[in-house]
Image 1 (cartoon, rainbow, N blue to C red):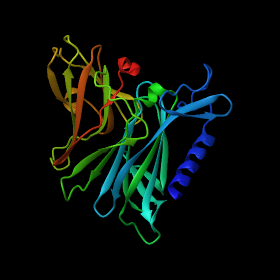
Image 2 (image 1 turned 45 degrees about the vertical axis):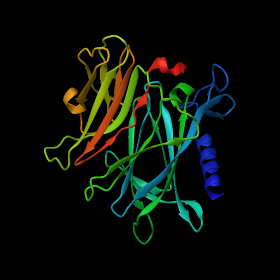
Image 3 (image 1 turned 45 degrees about the horizontal axis):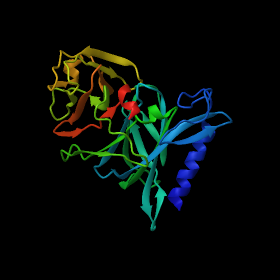
Image 4 (image 1 turned 180 degrees about the vertical axis):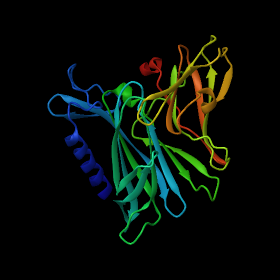
Length: 305
């Protein structure tokens, strides 16, 4: 009952904090909520937003472990994200206070939750470091509850958080986990646009090298050129380039920092788009470790599925 009460309280606080000026809230000028498979919440008498919830069943932070949470807003709109952290305690599940840091080095005040907004195409990375206690920082493990708030169902469909566990540098482990959502998010295998969130920090020291690679597989039935765009952690476009023509049925792979020159170091959202459908895979390399990044379909054709 404690976890349900905490989540309900968080939802009420979120609803009370919204205003019509916030971009993830629909002003309701064209009518009431149209959230499809997602839930809806009114803000005042006319404004509303769509939302869905999900859970990462396990995180581990401290004692050598860190857990990384990544997500990005789609091109279609702004979103708000809320993370709640829970730990088994005395036979129940209670909120747990964690130390956190953002990808730019900003230290988040220790808390049992973290809420933030993202503008279109803006990525986010939150690293869980340890449990905060008055007597010192210790290891914690448990679950992460996630709520995604959006101005419409099309935007909600295109948001998919990712969790990564790491024990670097002691062990070359960089393990990825997807969200277990309370709605069936579309797989959209024939999207005309895909995105992923990764860390770009090329280094001559192989043990510290952090790079992203990606593969485009053209299944459209005709030859295609695709546009690759990168956005920094503020949502600003920092690079764009077009691929050579990829013939139908062909797959081409690229290193992100080689394909888009002059990229800044740090967290990036990479978005690939074209007029024809394609399949997309992205990998994050972190020193001797690697993991698959969660691909998010953003193509307009896939919204009707």
